[in-house]
Image (tube, rainbow, N blue to C red; front, top):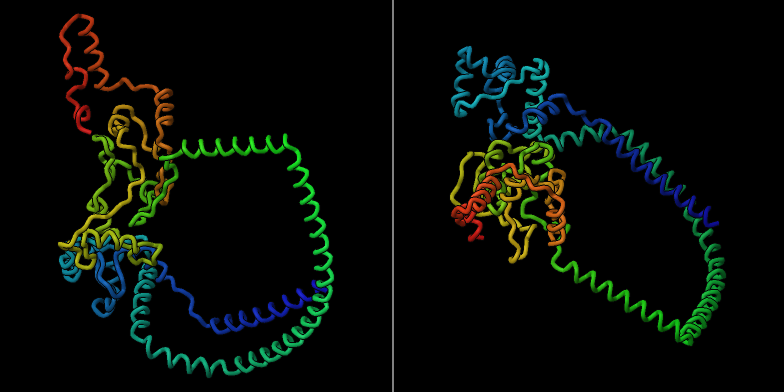
Length: 425
């Protein structure tokens, strides 16, 4: 009986959902398909141009009024050739934008470029006609689909009748099921009471067995001792720590997809104790021109806008302001004050790769602490890693050792006593 009720319920839901989907598909069947020009524009032009806003290049609204279609085709395909040919309009546009030439798109056919121009015109028309089109389009659609709406209403009334009949049948079946369920619940209560009495008897027998009680207490104490020791052993170990940063910087995109070297941003790893966090100016070396994102339909990403606010950069005028402020990055890797670690000694002298300690950073969307950074972890590495003696540091030690053999004078400077890190942490 329960199966019949559930089947009828699912049937009623299916009919309702089918009607809603049929209505939605019918109402949207006249929607216009996307044109080729939209796809070409978003994949090739949106990083530098917008329809109604100036970016690296000018706003494209009204370009068909300012220039002929024939000239636009030549300009988009190869602006450099048009400038070299002495075209006055091309030279004027070139000088207006600081003599920065537009990239050539010789791979496009004339028809593809005309599709892009048509897409820009359509976007202009949509922006201008949006308010009026709403009322006019609604009236035309209502008149054109009046017969369809009447048919849909008839189907809907029929469906309501079917659903009403099914609901009455379902309620009758639910009453029968409820009566049967009452008998089942009474039997279940009796079974639970019997099981509860069995548990009470087991507890009484367990408490009378002193040896079993003592052994169980000993196991509990041992378990708590191991748990406490393991907890104290990991105090101060932050492996897996992954804080939320003020800007969602993706190492996967920069170091993985774009294959930017770690030292481009963290240049201190080769020459100082700290790897250093790059200033926002290092980010702007690329992002003063790379502003758009495919993930945001050619718009500037919200995370990149945070960078622009930090350096007070206006992407429209391409100028810096005076209200610059540092980005409050959250530190991830943090050694105790009594532990000294020098990046340059490990990277430059030993030749250790960044991934040895920091893990596969090039695959991390958000960076986290990959290694435990405990003394045991460091000691295990020092016990297994071979020393690279092919550098000037060990040449000095060999030279000092030879002087000792000959009984010559040996100063602290000869064995690295003038290194900054010997005194300055």
